[in-house]
Image (cartoon, rainbow, N blue to C red; front, top):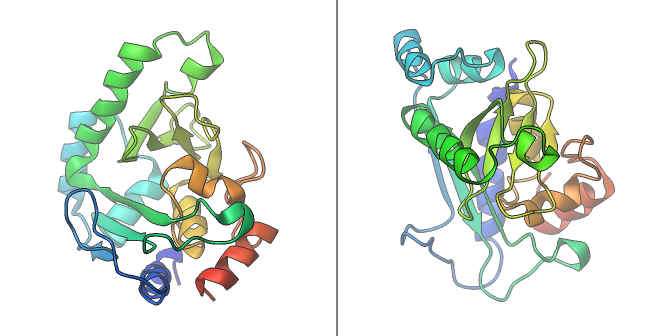
Length: 225
């Protein structure tokens, strides 16, 4: 059994939990009805090789395996009804979203590169350095990114890239792509903006924790197992 055997169940549970909350369903900025879930077929090796050529790099193995064995494209998103908010420190967790798209991967990472060149070119500055040696796979609506760290051969953690001094900048959210999606999905994919998932990551290296105190409170309130 692979990790991703349960992912669709996690996503469906999150969307069902959102739909069960009182109030009128919202729509996204582009007018798409929320919640939504798209899971495409797996990619072929030749399709991945073409994207790797466009990027000029080999995809990290965990990410590559997901693309070939599970899905080339996933889009999951939900948003709580207007005026309906979680309790306490979780009050900002009002929406959720994540995903990836092999066909748009080069385009998304090029957005990261443009941002890096325009605003964060100096590797000697700690904040700028976080933007380097990464592969962005998900663009957050506010202009931030989820990205895979390519700095070392033996580690490829998923990190958050903030363009405007966000508190989650540089946080490691999973030890690799598979671990990140597993952790994030068990929480119902909160975010993707950092202020929505920060309650579930207690420090920059602590990773998302669906079994921590905040995770347990959130899953119980939202209606996740």
